[in-house]
Image (cartoon, rainbow, N blue to C red; front, side, top):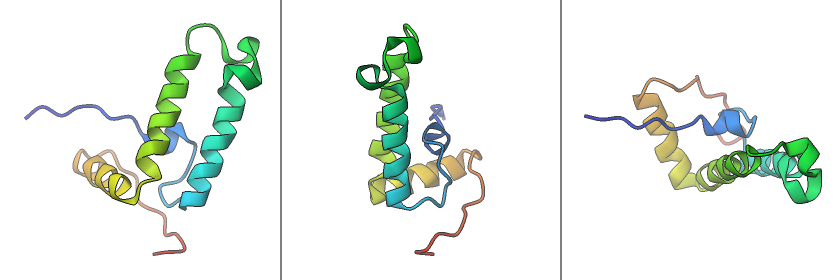
Length: 92
């Protein structure tokens, strides 16, 4: 069986595994403000890395904001042995 490497979306967004949907959205917006070339300017984001990094940030949000996709992602990460213990959130 071939396993594909999936980035740690929590690390990408600088969020804990127990982060609420609101915390995920805040982390996303903060990163977009920091890295988006229209806001931060090209001197802050660097030359070729910005589009790839922005794409990864947006991909992380699309997975972690959807409860079903987030659950599947967490399950796959734990199966691959890459998950960190989940912090208890207000919904636990």
